[in-house]
Image 1: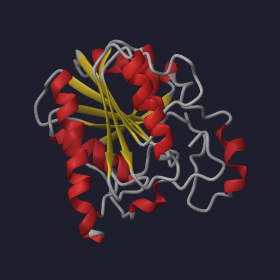
Image 2: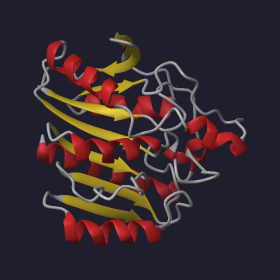
Image 3: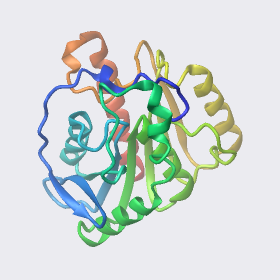
Image 4: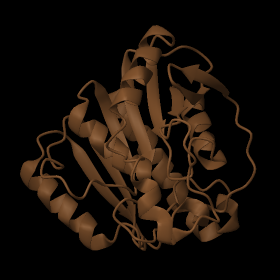
Length: 245
């Protein structure tokens, strides 16, 4: 993530091959993965990828899960054709790589996705879900896009802006107790300041014994002890979206 010299990101998620049930489409100047529900619902979710990019099978798995629960799920390439981070990338160059991939610099793409969802998918209620880098982006959208009705930021927060506690739409923040990328000290500050500053609904939830990347691991059966936490976090995500959308 943006504030760490060497983040331990979602390669800890026991990746496996997953082709996805949706399709890749062009939305204005970038590609996106789109998964649609069995029947139109008027509801959609912008799924915001982590540093491994829009083609990561884990993220497409989550998009398909959202579609199965009644949402059009669109996962745009927010790097707009630039290379995502890779499993063998040199962590000493992470900050240099990140310079032109800021999670708070995606407004042009978000605006295009909102147009697409309204004009092409008939969506009249839109939420967002983001992981790691995408969690920072989901936090950003909650500060600047009141038309996005609900957000879920999964192990990602904005840490360096004064207005970061003044949410315009409800947000569920999901964190892992043993996350070295977003340590509990920062989570505690977030929760305390939201209590002081925030005027909309929010929730901060910490999952015990979990590490960064746990929510969008696909092979949850690899670690049976983690499976209940993964399932609970995904249920929390769906319940939050359903509540406000």
